[in-house]
Length: 311
Image (cartoon, rainbow, N blue to C red; front, top):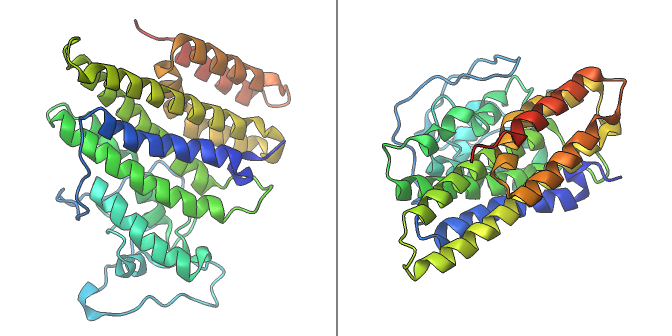
């Protein structure tokens, strides 16, 4: 059995799903491409749910033209947060906007082209703050803010989708074929799923806002169906990752389940009845390993919550 995203097929399902989210926003007519520009939000200190609480390095003078100099002797080959800023990555101490995600994707392309080993990593004391900002849930609160016009939120979702899609590709490509997906890839995938869940909610609202006799409605319904298929593909890809049970330790597997619990539950709820039933069955079939009853209980909990759909 292939081990998750490293095998390519699952990665394709996940990234296509995220990419389709961008296209659907345009098809539904509720968004437009956002301009790539720094966020205007006030600076806030990052709060992370990870065990590591690395300090954010002091900022450097961005106007001095200095070039980032990777360390060649440190066991951790990644850069300090201030060095990623020199590449163009937005500062990690504050909430990122959709434009920040796209700027980060452009900057990390330069980092990746120089040396993929320089990409920010979750457990790094040097670059962990940057990675944690990429997957920070607080970046997405704007998508649920109903005081912001739907079209604006749709544009924000599209920019985030685009940025995450590119960034995820860097990490997928650095995972050797046949090896389990890294924690970074899993976390970016879960963040992409959260954006897709919000995208689906915006798409549902867009369809409801159009009169049944409006000629655009048929196109919107077709786009909504396409989005739902993409969501089913993302759920399937996630379950394929989780089905590679032999590639995880018990602790790692429980960690992966905790990462995907909330976005996976919400996305399964958004599927149509047939797709939801199929995914719930696949989810329940993952419980088979009795050596880890805690993981089995987590899987049962996810399935129970995902099946609780309000009509």
